[in-house]
Image (cartoon, rainbow, N blue to C red; front, side, top):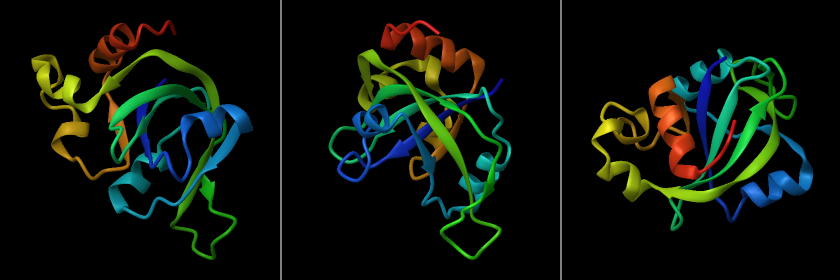
Length: 137
């Protein structure tokens, strides 16, 4: 199993929208490195949903439920998507400021590559984020 952080603009699609919908196609990704990450996703992988913009915080937990596949809305096989399913909101959102303050997150791509919309999360970082969000997985 791999772990991810998926960024979204909450005014366009928030974790509450994902909860309402149950599942959604995670689309709109065009960055080459982010697409490379999507291509490695497998059903059962887990992902934090991170709100960008003014919020800048982890708000929920989701699961990848499909293999990557070409975005059916576009005519470009390079632009891939996956379907994600809401698992649960976090008990305690974790802000970017909190993450930046913790030395144990040094090397985390969320901090190293701040514009990347699909971020791999190491096992060590994942376990610490579970503690911070008071989530149980």
